[in-house]
Image (cartoon, rainbow over all chains, first blue to last red; front, side, top):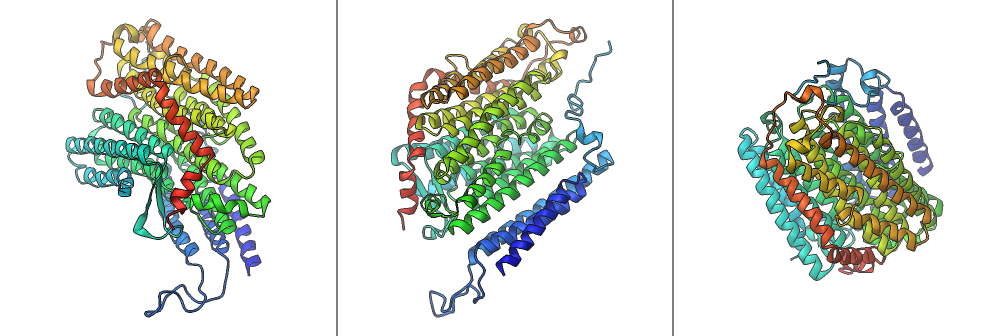
Length: 131
Length: 496
């Protein structure tokens, strides 16, 4: 089972890297989501896989009666899922606004390649080079 | 008593809510932000005084037993950095009172800044690796918010670069955390210190440590992972750029120092050699690129990179003296760099441009501003008796002491090139006659609300340089405790 999970994580990682490096920012978002899932599975596997009961304690006892699954990785993954969900949303909105401005999300376009667009354009004094 | 650890995080979070409620009344919002920053400063000062008298302070959040719960830990390094953060927060909040538009305040400038401060302090104070990741995420989100706040067209593609690269870094960080957990079964830093020596899989351990090094390397703008920094910082408003440039990369540096003195110390021939090489290349590439720039903010942005190299060099040498030097360098650099960004904003206000070819003769028209630039710039370049001189001297001395002659020579050479850049700004902006197109511009007066923080920070640089003796002893103690973290580990795990 762990081998299967490791293989899945590997495939997800390679797919995510391929998408992230493709130069299209929309693909980057998909790559980000994929890699987020790959990392979550990796944390899950790091907590050791076991086919035992859920980590719950009965009403009477203070310790679980039977062996239980490791709850910590699940808590970590839950946190990571929430955070990556928020990140994905922010990223999508940012890309949407960027697309509205630049009309492209291809990172090979001039808007993304130029290092310093409008250095002084946001200052209140227009450039007066032409005098 | 240990509950005071939570205040440097809780106070800015609370004021994030207050300032958020007042965001439609800009002056109230700004006043609340200043009040919050001052209370934050007081709590940070209190924390440092307690740490000085009691040693390491630990708070188990929610009273969960060690090591299952999450703990906040303040040792000397954390407490000093929290205090410097609080100082800078006060200065920046006062400066931005007259440098933010009502539009920016309405879109949540102050809550974002308070959140950012809370997250930075959280990252400094946490004693848990996963918690560190969470604080980094909070920090990122707050910085994203500020960066795209009033979404000027020019800033968006740069914001995309900043966001995407930092997101990749957090994924690497998370992967590294997963692997560390798989190897040791714990994420508490002090607990990791004890358990990491028992890991038998050397290859996986090295890979994991390098993965985390890459993640924090992106955050702290190490060579060759610094490309997001100059792309993003120079488009920010000066007050924000000062806060970002002063602090954000240093949090990454702090994380590297913490991890590679406390946790990953079993394979120094791999990790610290790579750190050493990266540090050298970071110093060199940052300063050389800066030399070719003409925009003040871009020069300063590239210098951040170069300066980070010095701190990592201190970490790579890994002697108490070198770590003390790295700590002094961090404190000095946070203050000096932030001051320079603030001065950059004032230069733009006084001269009308950030571009060195379009301004001049500010020395004649703005004498006080010249002093405000002169002190941090020459502190950065390492002139005695300013703070930067001692920081550089100690780094070079530590390198020589541990027989890293090449690194020492490189550090000295990079200092020389830093001087070149600073003199360039000085000559171009302050001394050269004003270019033709600027002769008509009248002398613009600068608000004392903006000059005040700059001069206050300058005073700190001078004082730190003159009274280096107590600062050095404090830093050396911190350095010794980093190399021999027994007290830290005992304070965290001893409460079982």
